[in-house]
Length: 440
Image (cartoon, rainbow, N blue to C red; front, side, top):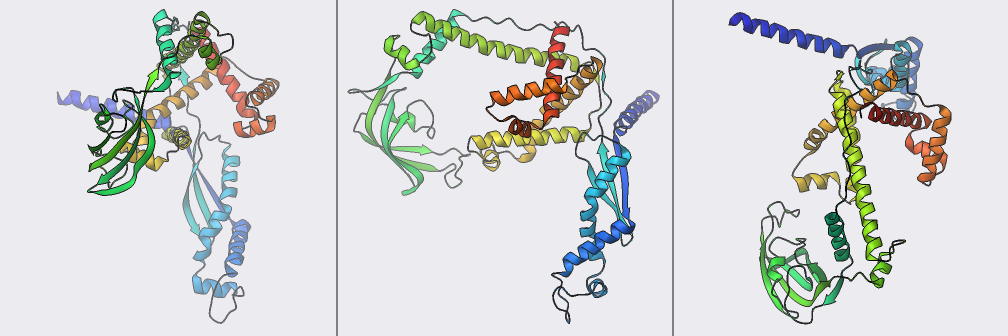
C-alpha cells in the first residue's frame, strides 16, 4: 500500500515538473546592464536637475558643487532617478538583444544599483506553444430558428402595452398597474430626511421602484385622499443612515391614471412609424422578422461558442498567468466603462453589490482564461490553414468600417489600433468562418 502511494506521489511530481518546465519555455529573463559613459551621463543629467533645487548652507540655490552635493546628500541620492532615466533604453536593448516578442507587457526588477551602473532583469513572456490536435469534423450543427404564432402574439401584446395611453380614472381606487400621481415626504424619528420628498410624482403601482411595502399600501386609496405609510428600509440600502431604519411617509394622492390599450387602427400604425406597416397582417409580419433576426443572431453566437468550446477540448497549451491577468485588466476596463455609461462608478457598484475589486476580478477570470485560450487556438489554426489578409484587403475593410462608424479613415484607424489590427481582425474572422465550414 505504501509503495503504491509513493509511486502515485512520484507520478504526480513528474507531471508537475513537466508542467513547470513547459511553462518556463516561454518565460524568459533578460539581464541588461547600463554602465560606462551611458551611466555617467545619466548621473550627470540627474545631478544638474537636482542641483537647481538643492539647499546647502554656504551656497546659493543652484550653485552647489557636485562633490559638496554628494558629500551632503550621498551619491546614492542620484542612483534611483538615474536608473529611471535609462530604463526605456535598457528595455529597448533587451528587446533588440533577445529578439523576443512579448505577449504581455514585460515586468522589470532592479538587480543591482551602484556608482558603476545599474542592472535590470526583464521578465519577458512570449507566446506559449499551442498544439491543436483536432479542429475538423466535430459535427457541430447550428440550431434551426423558428418563430411561432404564440411568440408573435406575445410580442404584439407587449407592443400594444408599450403604446398604451394613460387615462385619468374618474372613479374608483388605486389598483395594481395604475399610475398614481402623488406628493410624498419621508420622516425618520419624526425628522424629514434628504431625498425623501416628491411632488406630483407619477408612480406605477407594481413597478417596485420604491421601498418594499410602499406601493402596496397605496392600493385602495382614492384621488384626494391623504395617508401615513409605515415602511422599513432594506438592510443593504445605499444611504447608510437609512439602512434597516423604520420611516413614515406622508402621502397625498392627486390623480389616478389607468392604462388603456390601443386598437390596431390607423392612428396606432401612424404612431408606430414603421415603414410599410399599415395593417395587423403587415405588423405581425414585421414582428416575426424582428424575432427571427434576434433568434438567428442568438443561435449564431451559441453555434460559435459551441465550436470554440469543442475545438478547445482538443488543444494542449499552458497559458501563462500573465496573459490571463492582462485580459482580466482589459475586461475590468470594459466593465468600468459600461458602468460609467449608466452613471455608476465602480465604488458605487461595489457598495450596491456588497463586493470588492478582488471579487469582480475573480468573477472575470474564467471569461479571461477562455478569451486567451480561444485567441491562441485560433491563431494556431490560422497558421495551420495559412490564412492571410493582404494590406489591400485591410485598407478596403478600414474604409468600409470608417464609413459605417461615420469617421474619417485616419481617425478610425487611430481608435482601432492601426491597419495591423484591421488585418489581424480580418484574419481571425476568416479563421472562424472556416471553422464553421469544417465542423458542420
